[in-house]
Length: 153
Image (cartoon, rainbow, N blue to C red):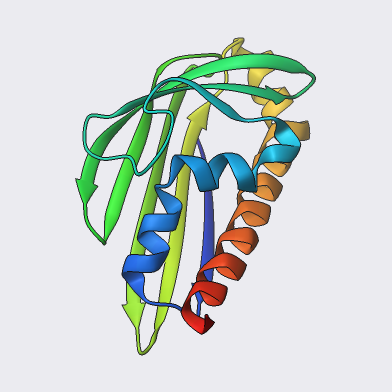
């Protein structure tokens, strides 16, 4: 299984960062370039334990539907979403938040496995891991900008 780990330092309090990360509306806004739309389940507001969101997204050249469930939730420290149904063989995204002085360290641990055996591993190595890393980093930069703006205003 592949692991992508991204750490982002944010000049904002942990609760603000945690709530932005679990906000379905903000998530859609931050990834509008990939046309991520919550089409069923929890389609607006803040996700919580046992919530399910069905996402329609356009990645890697085709439209996908991913059903994700919040399987762990400890506000404001961690929430975890896992794949219930979709195009990955396995998928687990841990959103971890730590306080450090007056800042928040947001840690994404994204574990996944593609189907298709050796071909899936090759596709991951050649393209998917880099693509997903860039996607997470881009989203985190947008989240950081929003969280820091919320604190200033």
